[in-house]
Image (tube, rainbow, N blue to C red):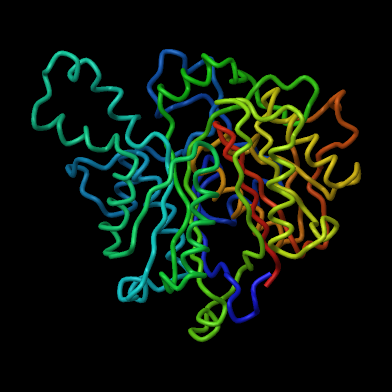
Length: 406
């Protein structure tokens, strides 16, 4: 663990998902076991009645109105708007003027599909060379870095910026990159996280992989049948503990450990023996200088796919020798928010620690035959001082984060 004066702390958080905007909305949904999954209303697909997704309730127009953007303004993708709403939520507890004037501010953003939700509607124009000036305004939104630029400009920030795209671990990796920048003195504070919007491209792609369940997903259940996709964004403000205390910031948590590894097993499947996930969780514990028994809650990646839950479940079972702390996946609440998942679930983990309450693993019924461990299925009161959040992406990109009580 870092020396006290050098510890990396979380001083503000903001998020939006199918559960609503802000930590209070998410905490209430967990306590009430209220899932955000529904048939898509804003995503235009012929298969809307077939799939359940974790869709943000606000339309693009509603988000623009909320952000004060004229409806005639073009070029803001849904990914950008969702990300802006999450940053706006974060700014409820952060002085924007301070960020705007900070000499060394960082912004490490993450997403995987950019403005695909809009650009996929322009496909026919693109392949028939019918792109006019109006259409051309949307083409650049396909670049994942577009939303990073849009967010920074909208809030008047001039940060050192980077965009990360490592599939479902993207925003968890952004947290690690931001923390390392702080440790090396490259920034004085850094906004980390990411956002993604639903698109037909991702829905059809995951469906083609036979990874999508058309009913509510059942993480760590013997009869699980795939994930429900979602959209959302989450952002955390990281800074060194000494500077946060000096400016009187409310410290929400300490980023005490982190680790990322690539298990190099398969382009989409995790190592079946759980070795990649095990190595990543052990690495985060080692960096935090904590024994496994110090973790009081694990927010599992828990996608409800056959491969992930088997691999991650084995890793948890082996690391804790069959007696893990309470663990659950919150994806049955939000859907799998892809690049945003790491940050959204990190924030939910910190909120669980603040409330000393473990979110339930919804829809679980039947123990997995391969595992002796079971997820927490009820909202459970536990004294939580350290939480672990897992994010595992395609290509074997595995990330584990550990947050500790401030």
